[in-house]
Every structure is written in C-alpha cells, then in structure tokens.
Length: 223
Ligand code: DX5
Ligand code: ZN
Image 1 (cartoon, rainbow, N blue to C red):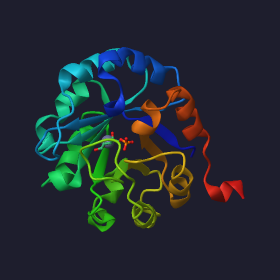
Image 2 (cartoon, rainbow, N blue to C red):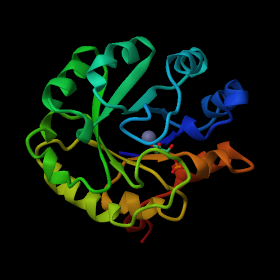
Image 3 (cartoon, rainbow, N blue to C red):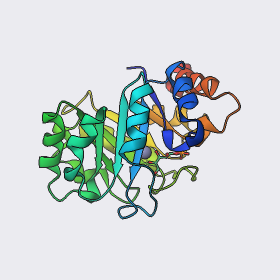
C-alpha cells in the first residue's frame, strides 16, 4: 500500500486553527492526527472536547485520535461522538486491553494500540490479530518537537515479523520526530503511516512538506 501521512494538530496554530485545518484539507494529507493528553499518563495537557468539536466541524479528512490518557474506556464513546474514525489507546494505560480494543470496534471505529519507546512489541503477541493499527512512539509521549529515537527501526521490523501471516493489513504508524530524513528508512522497515507535527507546521509551506512526505519512497523501491 502507499503510505499515509497524518499531520499532528498539536503543532498547529491554535489561534488560527481553522486556517491550519483548511491547509490540511487542501493538502495531500490522509488523516488529522489528534493528540489527547491528560497530564496524568503524560506530563502535559493538550486539549479536550471543545477544541476537538471545533476541529471536527471543519476537518474534511478522518480524525486519527491518539489517547495519551489513563483509563481511556471512560471516554471512547465520547470520542466516537466527537468524530473520531480511529481511536488509539496506550498499551501502558489499559489493564483490559482486549476489552478496550473491542469496545472501540463495536462503536464503529478502527482500533489502534500505542507502545511507548520502552515497551517491546512482543506484548502484542496475543492481541495482534484484533488490531487495525499499532502506533510506535518514536519519542516519549507528551510533547511535539522531540528527537527521534533510532531504536524505532528495529521495533518496526519486529512488529512486521509479529504481524506476518496473522494480520497483514495491519497499519504501522510512527509518531514523534518524523521528518524527510528518516521517512524512507521508516518505510523500508515497514511503517505505513507517518505522523508529523513540527516538521509540517513549522515549515514555510506546510502543504508542500506534506506532499514531500507523500512522495518519499522506501529505498528498496528507488534502487
Ligand atoms: C507526542 C505526540 C505526537 C507529536 C508529534 O506525544 O503523540 O503526535 O505531536 O510531534 P512531532 O512530529 O513534532 O514530534
Ligand atoms: Zn500522537
């Protein structure tokens, strides 16, 4: 499949959110990546439902909601109502992950599980068949603009191997420090969804940067 690009709204200009939403709408981006942080699971608070409602009102592309919150079960229905297409919960925040994943699917959303940089992909061994997406954190969650963690490449390959023959349509999403330099190596390793926050929104022409990320090919295809 051609890879997807999901600009992270966390890096948008919240005083001009509509302008940035329209930019994404008119760009080659596939999804809006929406980071929800509660100040408990991660040491930062992003935004809640009023901002999400405003975003959903203008967004013309699917909302990929990344919940960095404790006890996400309490809110998944509200996120579905707010317009989420995909809901991703953290492995580290879910005691009953199987139940949570199926609750997300029963609401009609696709279900993702995110892993922190220190969490091995092997923890997904008994749930990999049930997932639409696995999000590998390539920075510690909580903030945009951090440095990409190189071990992510190895993790992508391990995840590909785990999913092989069991869930070949699994989406492998990489989140944190993604840019035009590491993107093709990420695709080489098996990633198929690239989240990018600062790399897109700090650029003079963000739509062009989105296009650049869409154009990037795995090295293997370029040879
Ligand atoms: C971090 C968030 C990311 C973040 C990525 O906790 O999950 O989605 O917005 O931002 P960049 O691309 O700037 O690292
Ligand atoms: Zn995210």
